[in-house]
Length: 103
Image (cartoon, rainbow, N blue to C red; front, side, top):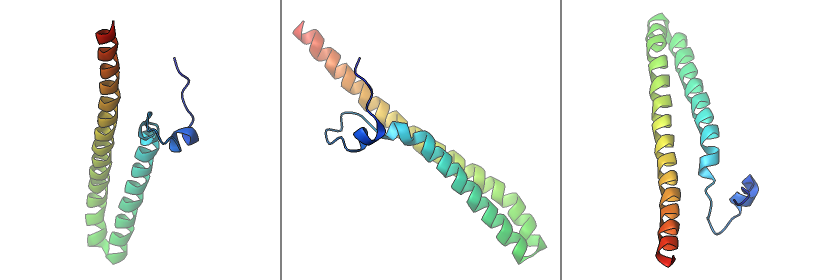
């Protein structure tokens, strides 16, 4: 089995024979959670700066928006992973079909 290429080797691989996106998905998900939390925190702070009623509204709204943003990020990243894995498996199927045809 071929040795896996490093991150920078994949980054400058002009043949695009291997995908870098699958290695970045976990990092991107963590980044999405971080920014969703930061956004929710800013909504919460802005709400309480505006007044008690707005702060209580923000206390309800901020966690809901956090969950919505995290779920949306997860769905988008899972769709990306599915697309890349489908492409990878389609390539394997084509290689196996060619091998069987030549046997």
